[in-house]
Structures are given as structure tokens and as C-alpha cells.
Length: 257
Image (spheres, helix red, strand yellow):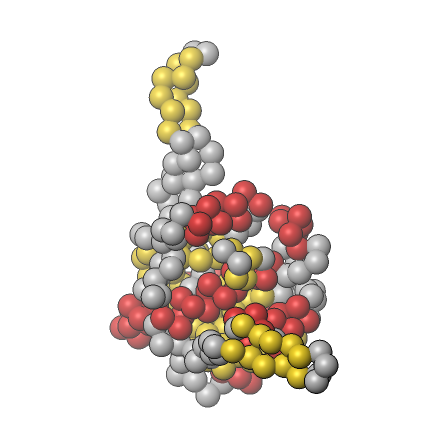
């Protein structure tokens, strides 16, 4: 099965980091968050990736073009103009990078890679800026059992602020960073039939609007419940939180060895 990753957005809410690189290339623990997402899929045996590039997509292309250099020890002999790569650490990945346009919406990006997935019985799709300990193997099995065209991962959003219970002018109770109001949201990590591309009109189509709304109306959208860890990297605060988790050695999304 192939995994499609949306990696072309502007990332305006984290502009401190995205002025020089696309959001999926922001580092967590010295590796792009895109790498973390790919490691999650690879852990479940999915190693064929299609990355939808857009804003500063050349940064992503250069990263994979020089992957050995990023992951290995290298000796440069200037006098001989040679390069020797030591301890090659190759991932079992096939990575197709597709320029899907700087201004294309999420649905339009999926439509632009239609030719790469048209012969698949199903393919995975997710966002290039969120991580989680989603069991991809179970997700795919769930999708097949539902006999629908699309499955999304439903998750509870992480809390962002302390919740106050006020009595008059005094705080009766305080809960630091509670998790939302209990309502589940779209956490990405989709499994889709290529038929869903017929629901996408053009580059201006937002995947999360008309296509998903129509699929839901037709009873063709299932929700895989995920109650484990899930965290988008929307802001600098989110990035700092993920970095702290990684540096602690207990990053919940690191399901690989």
C-alpha cells in the first residue's frame, strides 16, 4: 500500500520556522517531522510514499536527494575530489515527490497525484505536520471491514489552556491543559479508495469540505477511533512540546525500534 503525505502548505501559524522551509521539514529531535511520520508508516510495513510538495518543495527534494549524507558519516577528500559514505543507513523507502503547486488546496493536491494511486485498491493519506501512535495496521483492517470509500482517524484534540472553574472572583478548581470537550475531531491518517478522487473538483477544492461532507452524506465515510497520543504541529508552542517529549526519551509516537 502507498502512503500519500500532504506537505505543500504555507504553515503561516508557525511562520517563525517556515520562512526558510516548509512546515513538514521543521525538525523534531534533529529530524524533520515528515521523517517521523514516514517512520510511523514504515513501522507498519508501508514504505512507498508519495509526497505532495508545494511551498518551498525544493527543500524536501534536496533532503531526500542527500539522504545518505544526512544519515551517515562521510569523508570528503578535497585533494582527490572524492566522497566516501560510511555506515550507510538506508531506509526501505521509495519516495515520489510531486509538485502539486504553491496555492493548491488539500483536495486539489490529492487530485494531482491521482495517476500514482489509480490502480491501488486503497491508499493512505495524512498531513505532513502531525504525529501520533496510530496503529496503521489496525486502521487499514478497520477500513476494509467497513466496506466504505473513506476512513478517517477520529481523535480527541490535545488541550491547550488551563480550564478554570470560577466562583465569583475566585478559582474553585484548575485543570491544566484539559483535552477539549470530549468531542472527537478529524486527526488525518486516512485510508481511501481511489474512487474518492472523483469527489474532488479542482485545485481549489478543500478535501475536508465538499469531498468529506459528500462522502459522509452517502454513508461512505467511516471513523476509526484513536484514543492514544495525537499532536498536530500548528504553532511554535506545539513544536516545543513535541521537542520536549522527544528529548525526554518518551515520545509517544515513536513506535519503531
